[in-house]
Image 1 (cartoon, protein in one colour):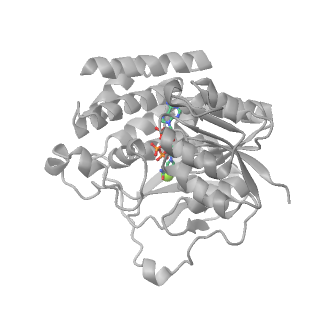
Image 2: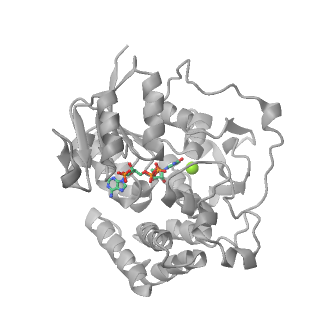
Length: 375
Ligand code: NDP
Ligand code: MG
């Protein structure tokens, strides 16, 4: 069996650390070739000591680098394009991941994509890089992993609908009055998943689900009017595909990112001893589904509308959301202000051109500035 070299970008985060747990279990198949973090030097040093990668990069703080480490923004691209790397797991949070996604695809690597923001910002460019560079884009996001598995290679023309499931987040059943006073601690208390702070807030606003609808549109080539969202609080059904003949396939499992991460590395193969606990439908019962409360969570439709508009609108949505979430995490704005900031940025900047990488980066910067200036 060929042992494949993996670069983990964002190895100190929630997805990065889960990936290293998975890789530790599968040392016969994979070798950790590169690790990068932003500023968590202590955890990065411990990971480097255990996995002995050929490259270690700390993007955000040159002062804290260990011996032989690289520093600075170039780390991500250096790690993603090394000769001894076959697969790049991009688990960086936010638009900082775009350069590495593009560079890895340009150099023909498989990208196991957790960093959905890069695909949302620049969907056409990323998909084109995958086509032209000979690389391959495989989703880590559990919903998209589910859809990939259900599709099993069938074309978009056979798909009647993709249905993404959403847990509904911590505010699923909160009324408008309660939502207006939601605190940061409330927003970070996700009912079914343990995740980084930014995606936890995105799950509370449902901006995450909008990012995922756009992600699904690009990955699977299905138009927006055939992608739907349903709330499923137990997070056991990871998503559905309804085919043109009416047959509906779903992929299920306990809510854990271990399997989607492993599958992104081995797709289309499946490995034994995945470490995933046995599926017990009785213990996981009942499974319930309900419509999204779209009025209570305006970020969902704002994002989907941005996806439909095209040009730089998805990049503006993504960047405005990132900036607003950063302000919310920092205690500057309230929960409901996130959607207001995103709406304002889209109204002002949603029509910007998005045809080139420079267009996208300019729109991203303008959207951040716009939100910053609102507060
Ligand atoms: P975390 O915040 O837990 O981790 C983010 C990682 O990225 C850390 O290693 C961090 O380093 C690094 N990082 C942060 N900023 C930068 C930067 N500017 N440049 C380079 N590296 C940076 O996030 P998650 O692991 O939860 O999420 C990562 C990505 O995966 C996101 O795009 C998210 O949407 C997606 N995702 C996550 C899921 C989950 O279950 N967590 C599920 C599906 C998708 P440091 O620790 O040093 O700050
Ligand atoms: Mg997801």
